[in-house]
Figure 1 (cartoon, helix red, strand yellow):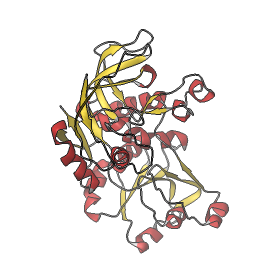
Figure 2: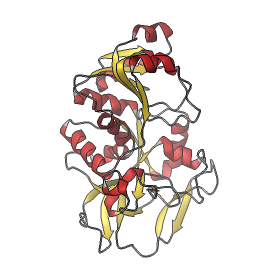
Figure 3: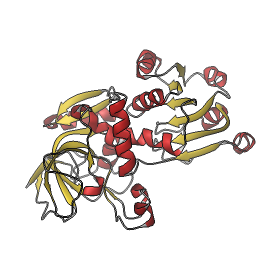
Figure 4: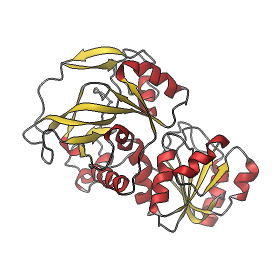
Length: 333
């Protein structure tokens, strides 16, 4: 039996829960959970914000652990190996997207906590293709948030073909943004942080920002006009998108990874005349996650975390609900 913490209704309390996972699939890996990050997507799933949650629900998709069991076709993974698992746990492996290395775009891709139980438990299972070996240089306690939050802000640098000479802006210095600053700085970019919390300026510079702009100050935003090649928005609330488009240089790109649920309202002519673009992306493929982990290990990038025992999961969830973590929460047994 697998033991975890599950909710039985939207916004419900997470309580001890046991279930029988059944036989291990031929391509599956069973991970003994050591640490599991707490992501805002766990909160969205707990609350059924996206209308796809199924109950009882065990959240948790920023998982670090060791391989406890593996099916006969689970290649590339060894028993006892320390690995990570993120937002996705399975895909068909046969479609054009999987075959081209873009598994996360597979029409049949399966979320780790969508219709299945996640990592707020002592064990979790996934297809071996989505189970990523963790570099030895990374601290396993703080590495969990890299498996979802980290890849979410790393993948855009590859998708946007961001040059190390680029001037990059990061909007929102929170759970995602503080990792984005570290990646952008290590990439070699000149980095500007946009934050609505002026008290975070010193921390933002510590994460790698060269400049910090108060996003609630219209005049400060105006002064940033025509200064950035790439802006990565990590927030999940509507903003004055026109002001950020104006901050882009010609051929600049505004890239969104924050899950804003309202339609975007943007002016066309600044995009058209400046040949600018808007794009978005989810997490990333297993290959890109592996590249991201190697990059993080090489450049000593790690999330700033607060630790909670699994028994304190509801306390941790409430802290996340009120936007209080600095900057990610990680659970442990």
